[in-house]
Length: 428
Image (cartoon, rainbow, N blue to C red; front, side, top):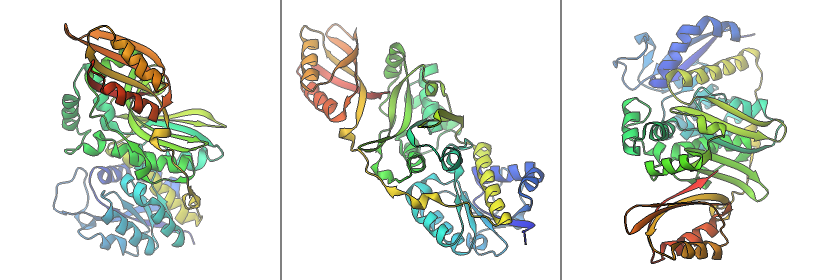
């Protein structure tokens, strides 16, 4: 017999949880029509039931103990939007053990414990829906699992962190230094009080782990991803990049190669003609290449209350349809196997290098010798005088093995004519 009322319980009522309530209040009738059953929010677990909320909510729905949601037999779908990792992991496990479907927006949880939890979901004959864990309201998980399932994904490259993209956009368009742009992002609510996860690239790495797992049908350990944040990017680098025909973006990159997977997050110069170069402020975009579909790009708001709530509510609808029609959506992720990850020294990149050198004869010859000995060829060179004794030099290399470039850089750093190595960035 089909369920006419499907109970929903929320864990958390912060930014995303409040957005979920707003969407339900606004579109409840349309959601019921699409599911064929009424979705009813029955309990919401919060830390402080007396706190003022961004959305109107009946006090009768609020409880202070997550177990009051997890153990409620009238709740069919548990929506985890409380954040954190360990408490969320235990809550999801208990929900599955109690026979409930789970919806989560928690990228840290799914990147670190997704395989374990999905295996538990399969054992419990339930499922976990996590579209909102990457890219806010941008459809990414579902297309990779379903729409593009017939493809071998060759590569993916994306801007998956709105905070860093906002900062780099402000540096580019308004000439702000990183610290000023970060303070503005915090004031606007695009950055946390502690922005280190965003600025140092960890947030993007967790999202890459989730996307790469689905794109390459592999179990991905986030610890295998090379991560470099944007804290070393200076306004001077942004200006030189523009002069050379590039924009600077924090990119999450995955490639499937014969040697293994290439997985990395780092700031990079990307040609202004590339679609990702035009993605600005808090927007996100992911660029994919499949062997059958060719190149596709997904673009939209990567965070925020309503965009993320849009993805959460879509997952709730999917879970509700599964319950109403008693169908198994399948958990393809548990069939994935580990794949070797190419060590960074064996990966290939082009490089942007900015340095200061004594303004005297022989400097370029010594640089050319160091690069030549390491078999690194140069693509572009800019030299500008900083003062009477010092010249600033910007070099862009052709693609080269990372280990070779690192060897050349070590030799260059020790040259008596080199005053400082000021910036090293990769080039797409």
